[in-house]
Length: 195
Image (cartoon, rainbow, N blue to C red; front, side, top):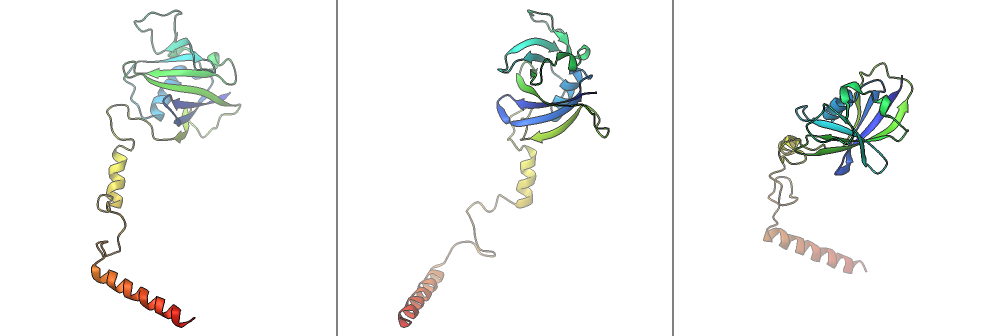
């Protein structure tokens, strides 16, 4: 049984991607659900795959259901279509669109084929996570709630002026500067004496 590894890129940023592994006998519905899980999206919106070429041009559609829109060719249904039936070459690509109002678009590229399944994995599975994924709703910062935890742990709010000495306020007084100047003069005098 062949196991396919796909790399799913966020269309706007190819540094953000997820690798997923799935059996060739599983359906596009399974691939759809593992993509949503890998990016921590919910499953409340419409979605569709498009068979694609090397230039990411959209071809035959593979949809969750038949939507109320014009089709040039009747779409295949995700639940009825196995992934292996749509793999035409070793560099097969798909475009995945989720939530037609927000237009989340992901580029799905086949990156490897294994002949043996890993008995310890429950397919489909996420095998690699790279980059911080987008927030599905809202306009939170890239780190979201995680930044608040980091800020609290390292107390980032107090040290905004720069580096200071431990126990001090980081501001040198006039007496400190005078002492540094006198020590500097002593050093200069000593170097003259040694010549």
